[in-house]
Structures are given as C-alpha cells and as structure tokens.
Amino acid sequence: MGKFTVHESEIEGVKRIPPRVSKVLICNKTVGATKISMGVNVTEVGSKIPAHSHDNQEEAMFIVSGKGKLIVEGEGEYELTPGTAIFAPVGVKHEIVNTGDEPIKIVWAYAPPLPEHLNK
Image (cartoon, rainbow, N blue to C red; front, side, top):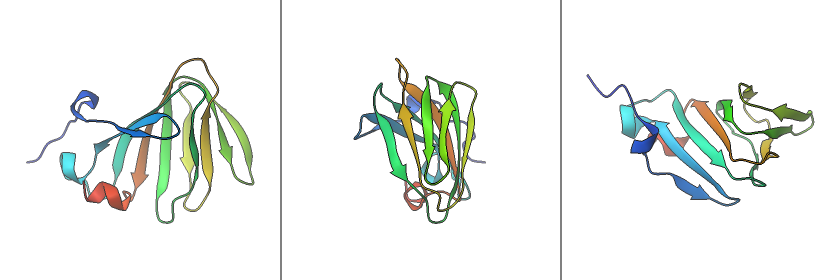
C-alpha cells in the first residue's frame, strides 16, 4: 500500500507573481494519484490568481479563510467568503481577487490532474 495522507507542512510552497503561494498536496509524487490532484493556495492581501482557464480539467475550489471575488468571463462576479465552494468548468476563464484584509486560503482540486501534477 502507498501513502494515504499528506500534511500541508510537508510540502514546500511555490511562490508566484502576483503574490501567492501554491502547494500541491495530492499528486502522483506525494501519494501516487493519477486521476485527481489537490492542493492549497494562499493569495496575499490585494493580490489575485490571474484570469486563466484549463483546456482539459475541471477545477473545484473551497474558500477556507479570507474574502475575495470570483470573476468569471462573460458571466459576472461572485463574492467569496469562508465556506464557499467554486466550480470552474473546462475552458471557462476565471480569476480570484483577494478583496479582504487577510490572505485568502483556497483548497483546490483538478480532475484530471494538470500535466505538471502528474510529473511531480
């Protein structure tokens, strides 16, 4: 049997610009996952996850802490508070902006995993 748990403290974060840190917790490297990947993103006050879409993946997100807004191209803006779940379908451009006074922490999952999550 393989590994079944990963603690966030075990994974080194990747710093990105605009200021945010992403950690891939569940992937091929950490637990042998091949059909899903999952991790956390902490986006600093006043920062954002820039607008992007995924060609082959559905993405689910969950707001753990902080406040923000989701901007979905052609659809509108949605308030984000702790306890909010988000679904981003394949090909839909989306962006998350931290509008609060503390970092916004998001748990995310991709199915299937992003290609780079399979090679980690």
